[in-house]
Image 1 (cartoon, helix red, strand yellow):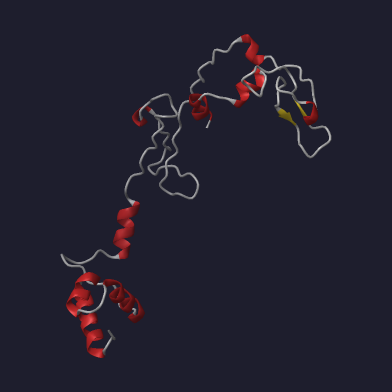
Image 2: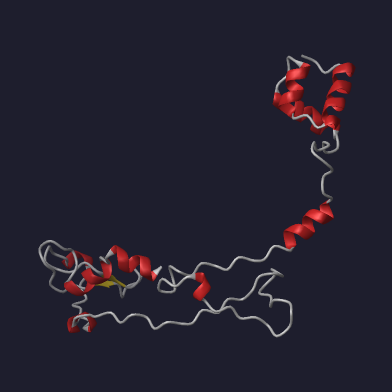
Length: 188
């Protein structure tokens, strides 16, 4: 299929009438929707007329887009299950909302800081074991293999404390290495 002058003229006419690329391809026959779109771009045809009334100008669309009120962020998951309506919103004394950063309509939201729930831990959780500071060649099945320091430096060593049979780490380092999923989610 080649684009003859009469096919190009028909394409321009159908495009200005507001037909879609698929409809134009069907009317021309022997051409795909993508071929129509490609030809329209190569011809640099202006935007199509919209069926169903006049299209709003770019200024009208920009004004409509900028006048929508900003949505309040949902802090329910981070603020202990509170709803966004419970979160106090700070407003300035003037009629315009305060801005934050480069977004002119973004309102600052001030959430009250809640005290973090106290974690009940056993007294031995806070005791750091006295590490034996052993080298890689001295590790055994019963020693803690927790690395300490930079492996490229001479002062690098392993914990070396006694570890249970089913763990490569002592009790203290096992608690650091293996955190329950719920605690990992809270930390991030």
